[in-house]
Image (tube, rainbow over all chains, first blue to last red):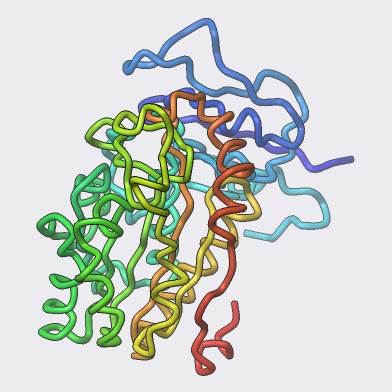
Length: 80
Length: 260
């Protein structure tokens, strides 16, 4: 099973430039065409299942708008 | 307070603390934002935020002081290396860097940067090369490629009358005072990671007092190039990287031992 992840896009920063959409290795990112941000852009969002939490979108994001989380698996789970 | 379940999830990436909460004035897709983010991430990693002074230039980078959450001043056009020299000499324990574009540094500020490098000032210079004057409307800059159309060279840059572009990294690498001069690009994840490593190395060079360091970062300007951000990245890869090859142009032997 590939690792699972999720992203959170902070919409006040996102300007819909699509750099993350073109960089996503899983092709699960797209623009949310159903709503716009306060600046008037369609923000980036997950459009399909399959995010692995690799963080490539956060590396190319010019606005540091993306927070990336990855699910812990049994093997990498650290006791807290 | 974490807004995720620490038992089932790990945080892969979040916005660095050294950036303020303000949304930038940059156009969508502008890689100025990537450069800001990398500098902020490196300063957070090195725990230097409280002891850093940045010097902003004139151009799109002029509002850096709004976006970085540490001490910042703004220099007259092109004079950021001179101002950074003064700050570093008066406060040698601070990390001092300048953040300049190509219109600022390669044109009006050419004298300042060359002499700061020749003197071997212990400062770090970030040089964003996007081949035009972004803020004022995309006029031709000293780094504009031959044949490239800009608002002040509508038929393309004619090298017969307007001369050839200046490769700043190669030029500064020839000076004995410069210790670490490299060129990186902000186009794809691999190059962005390499740029971050170079930024880290440059700050280490300054921390160890090894002298002048400069990082040239190839950047895009989608608005003035008249392209979408994604096609601008392709243009950068196809046109800019062949003319401005990426690589290390000067690495002092003492720096070659620094590894991350």
